[in-house]
Length: 270
Image 1 (cartoon, rainbow, N blue to C red):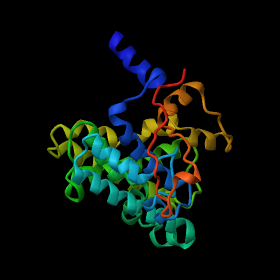
Image 2 (cartoon, rainbow, N blue to C red; image 1 turned 180 degrees about the horizontal axis):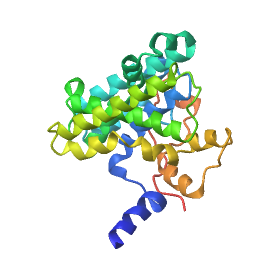
Image 3 (cartoon, rainbow, N blue to C red; image 1 turned 135 degrees about the horizontal axis):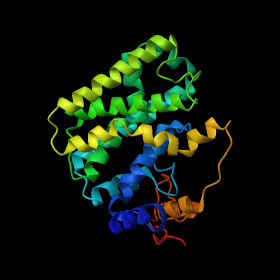
């Protein structure tokens, strides 16, 4: 019990996991394109920063944490695919008319635009397991279930119905039945597929959204009528180590690449 309390206290209050710093950042870089219209080239040249960091810094950080170069390359390609698709979604609203009301196509589209593959590969790396990349069928199924569980969880708190980007836009009742069938079949596949130590990570990843959605301010705010919640003191302590000192324009060269790599003190503020 003492060890459980210590671990919980470190995670939610007084610290973070420095050995997974850049893995956390990868999840952040894979999440933000859903909210902002970011030109893909801004990711590549370092013009876009997240809490002060650029994607090239994150990529090098993953390698420094011991993530296999092939996994980093796969995760990067998944990120590029996501960034391009997210950008196209925002500049071309008619894109959704191509995939809407087609469950299999919509499910595949959702997985790409959410970058569930790349995030899953990085999650496996956190457990010392190397993904098989594009040949990793178990990761693909787990990623699909992850996105489907996200939509089911959003539906349960009333923030999904009526959105153009939902998986069941169109004939809702029919598509919801298809969504549930696809999710259950995916879970059955993961139960039968011999994935070794990866099983425990992938089976949890496949249903992680059932826990993620009720905890996430983004969805709680929408459920309360788009009311913004202030960042709590506990959350600010978690975020503090991830904020890089602001880079001034003088620290950028003509290619907009960061010259300074000075990172803010990673000591958690009390």
